[in-house]
Amino acid sequence: MLFKTTKVASSLKLTVIVDIDKKGKEKHGTKKLGNIKTTAVDADLFAVGQAISNIKNYPLVGIDREDQFSLVGS
Image (tube, rainbow, N blue to C red; front, side, top):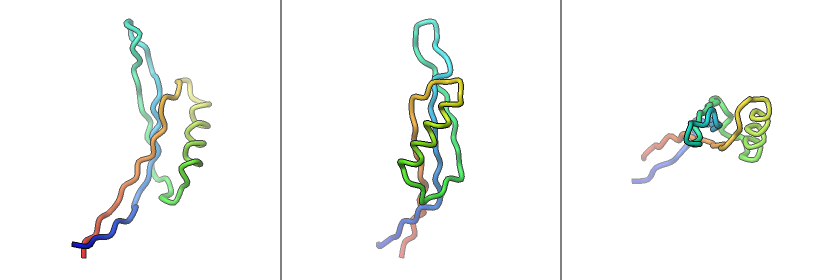
């Protein structure tokens, strides 16, 4: 079967350190920003993630892009 993939949505997920427990283990939290243009360039999203982390109180440990695709068979 032939099929076509189409990117239908993108989001940006930031992972930060929100706490450190008594044993020194980091506790992480995430913030997901939706409605990102599907045509956004990865370098631009990375820059936005870093800029947002600069105004937050928590250290940034990860920036992820999540894309959603639609599969249509023919």
